[in-house]
Length: 132
Image (cartoon, rainbow, N blue to C red; front, side):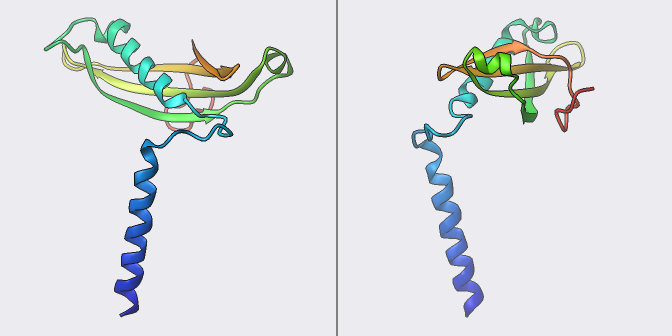
């Protein structure tokens, strides 16, 4: 009798955690607002990456996947410029034409003044985000 009760409680906790996805992000979270920037990066890749140029049904690539994200150390120079957070990310995807050639991209996201910016980053290990 205890097991079904525990399972029901666990299900309730999981549902509560899932329902918080639409709430406003925590202003004390240094990574708040990063997800929309990653989506914008994905859209830019779809529009501009060489692997995505040839369109099929309006899309040049599919199977987009952020394979890793890792916090980066902020240098004193970056902190002096107001940078409060940095994250490197790797994304993989497949071109839809020409046999579905795989592609990848790397970006460094920096947050300053509450706003995220994106710059191209050097390649990193696609699973760990460690420098290669």
